[in-house]
Image (cartoon, rainbow, N blue to C red; front, side, top):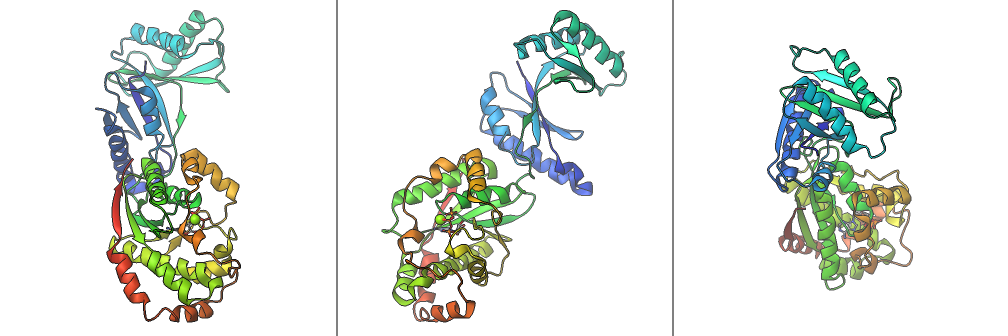
Length: 392
Ligand code: ATP
Ligand code: MG
């Protein structure tokens, strides 16, 4: 019953002179997203984006796809009437209510918009006459202009559009309007959520995963690829660097104090991720850290890990409780995959009593114990990195 969608956006409207850049990006992201579903026509017009659906399109798939495009604040399924001939339009609004609302018992008001100012009937007249016609046809309806349960909008353009339902979009900014960042993506709950949140602000994602075969399995890696696939529904394609971290971890394990294993390992992760980040023109790193969640995420630990990075490190979950992170993970569809029980490279090499208040100079001193091997190991890890192009 719907032939089109009207896409609304929020914040983009505030972008002043750059507004058209954001609008075009949003139009392109919508078109790309729907492109895999069929032959949709996406156009930009006066403060919104209009999507025309091909014959026989799948409504559910389309709704789901539009719900994944950052920058979309809301979207309305639209009934299109091919003519603006008044009696036909009036009849069509009645048919719309007939089909859309099984219980014809609600308060409403009619909103009218006329792009064509030569249309013989003014907007207030359109509202009044259609309101009247609806009341006559459906005795259970009532008019409430101040707090209606439903607003039925009728737009007169070269054709007539009728809509009343607004579906919530994810909000944010269209991907591609804010540069690129490198996500440190593990198989856990937090980092996919962190990537989602930064990408929601318009940032293109690249990702790096550290695995430690044979201590971590192929399935643990597949899980990370799957997680990247799930968030790429929103973020667009993600280039995933899979770094073989085993030899570096073994060297740290062999040479450094065990209570410092995790923190030193995290510092090497950040160094390698930053190497790839700079190589692909990323403007920052992203992690799923949150203050105090584990020993390696105390304020002192964060300071110590941060010290090896030159790029800014974005930690969108820094002030979040675990339950709040889980909520988002469930909403974006990563949670079920994240909790699959495959081992993580960090959990295998953890100490019984990791330091919770590492002191930077002490950690730097411990790292000197690696000095004769680490450069070569880093070089090997970088050279043997596998690149996987992940797309939804
Ligand atoms: P997550 O749920 O994201 O795995 P976590 O609670 O397990 O987080 P840590 O293991 O301390 O936390 O990791 C902190 C952050 O470091 C992660 O959010 C992620 O960004 C990064 N990280 C940890 N392990 C890896 C890994 N194997 N590969 C890539 N990044 C990692
Ligand atoms: Mg983890």
